[in-house]
Length: 123
Image (cartoon, rainbow, N blue to C red; front, top):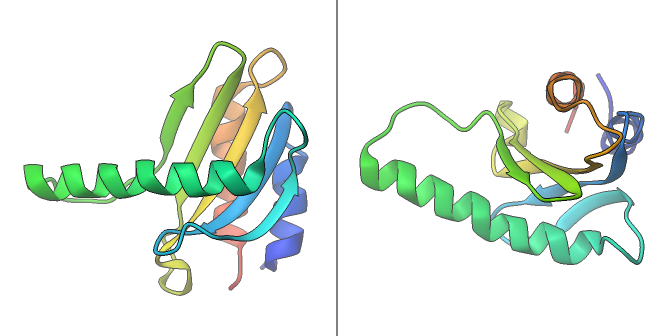
């Protein structure tokens, strides 16, 4: 089991990682961040992606869809943005946000590795 700081460091080892954050869905606040920079404001991205997660949850509820979100993928011309809501009982209401350089990342491997990071995260 990994604590937040170790999990974020592990996520940053994913090929092409630009930044990662653990985000509270209720507030949009990042509980931990690593990476980012002038091209990627992680605090702002965390807040903005919170709106995306909330909208998807509302849409699922309105459509009567069962199940839960495994991940949300946003593809940009130069980046991939992965959003992975935590599924553990202690992680309810949180999500991992990972931004990747599209030219360096392997999307399938990144999704798998983020899943492993989530499964090992201890809150």
